[in-house]
Length: 414
Image (cartoon, rainbow, N blue to C red; front, side, top):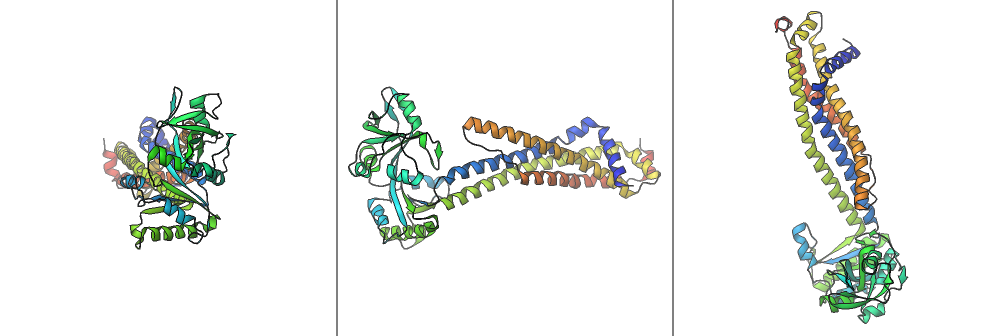
């Protein structure tokens, strides 16, 4: 029997039970739709995060205190470590120790609210060097001027605020020269940053910059740094500079065994690689979990095909009586299963793409980010392959059962 005739016969049999066929493929549709959604949204998230991290700076190296976190439980130890101090910073600035260092600055993170008059706002507060931020990220004030290295040495009570901070505290009024209060200490606003949004690891619009010496002395009362940022002379020099930094700090801390380092070094390349690996692994894990629904859908297909074989026993006997072979019957029922799952896969792919596109628009608007739609070619190929594979895998048993029917007994079946 020709394949085209087999396909027509299989399609007619499925069309005769439209409702049952539709319910049968529901599990396949849901599974394929979910896989397309996961791959599309996962790729969109990966593109967004990597683009944000792209602003990290190809020639930027960040030195952080404590052992490198291997999991969430290691984060507190790293955050509250006091292993990076002024003498370490001074050693790193010496050209004999780190020849490729072009610029550097310590950073302090202050967890506090900012107030002015009756208004209060909780921004991201950094004790940092404004000039380093300008040279590293090419950001310059929209109003006023940055505080200087002299202000850092003199522990001046001055502040640079982001655009959103300015509007939250001052509205449309002029903020320059006004005093904002942080932990009971007054800081004079000397500059307002332009509206930039998210940049690398912080949002420029929600930041307050203070001289790091001022933050240490008046707000925290500490003598150590949250991190030290270093700018390499070029992107190619980053790996070499990172090794020089490690060697210098190990010498300063008397460390001979690298596994006992009380600091760790972060580069843009390392961060991008880690994030990409984590997101890819997470996407693959979620897709494998969703694949369980395809197994359930496949079992549903097999169950309905077995019911169909039982209901059509006399039809099988009649067809065998007029010359159909076991192979013809096997191919017909197997083709019915493949058509069912293939149709479910096609509907799932179309539905998944539509929902992915709508979800990318909704997420972008809800979060206020440039969440782009990503066409999941891998998910598409996987959807087609899996749906066809499920049809073959779970359709073979009912098809073999139909093919093995004895024509005489089948004709007698009531």
